[in-house]
Each structure stands twice: as structure tokens, then as C-alpha cells.
Length: 180
Image (cartoon, rainbow, N blue to C red):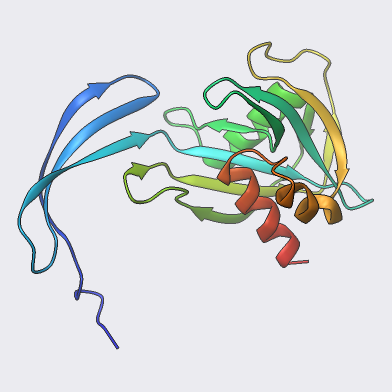
């Protein structure tokens, strides 16, 4: 059995190459155990909050969206960047309402994870809500997609067909299914 310190990388410094409100590219001066010191590129993104809104028929509200970065259409959970000073749970509720018109009255933390830890620092917090109510037709035009209540039981088939976009939605939905 290994200890926590075995395999630990030493970090000496970090310098920013590019910075914006959405992404920061840095070079980190590191040394792996038993290896030579070098600079490693790291992409640092803002914290993201997602919410799986589930109704009493065990359907989850998903958004059909086009993502220009990969030029793909697919289903995903509502969610987005946690604003400075904002609690992650509040961001999940806000994003759900902005993107779908449905407002979770309460959310429960489901899990937190990093989706691509080799070079990307992008903390994700996932919540579940079972008490969302429809409150508005007004949605953020840049954020909205077609919202559809989808049977939670169909998530594994959707994943197998490549219809779920992004690791955030995929991890969250599969974890939610596993906990049922």
C-alpha cells in the first residue's frame, strides 16, 4: 500500500500566460517524484454548478443544445459558472431558471468532481432538485436550449448513443442513476 505522500508532485511556482473572466492559462513549475523539474501547462476554469431537476415521474429536465466548440448537438443538464461571492447551490438554481424557466425551490448536493484533471482545473458541483416549479417563459437567449422532461431510465441509452454532451452532465446523470 502506498502513502498519500508517495507519488506526490512538488509545485514550485505558477505563472499566468493568459487570463480572462472565463479561462486562465498558466505554466506550473513542477517536479514529479523521481523525475526532472519542468513547466506544465494548466487550464484553470471557473467553478461550475449543475442541477438535475427530477419530477415525481422520475423524469429529468434536459436541454437540447448546440455546442459550437465541438460542433455537436446533444442533451445536457442546466448549469453554468458560479459568480464571484455566489454559493454554488444558488448558482445551480439561478442557472436552471435562466436556461429552462424552472426554478428549484431547494437543491441537495449530489457530488463534486474534476472532469479532466490531467491539464484542466475545472471544479464541478452537482445538485439534485425534486421540487422545481415553472416560473418564467423569459430565458437567457445565449443559454437556452429546448427543454424536455426525459425519463431518467433512458440516460444510459442516451449515453451509449452519444446524445449526452459534456462530462458534467454525463457524470451527474450516471451517478444519480447509480444512487437510485
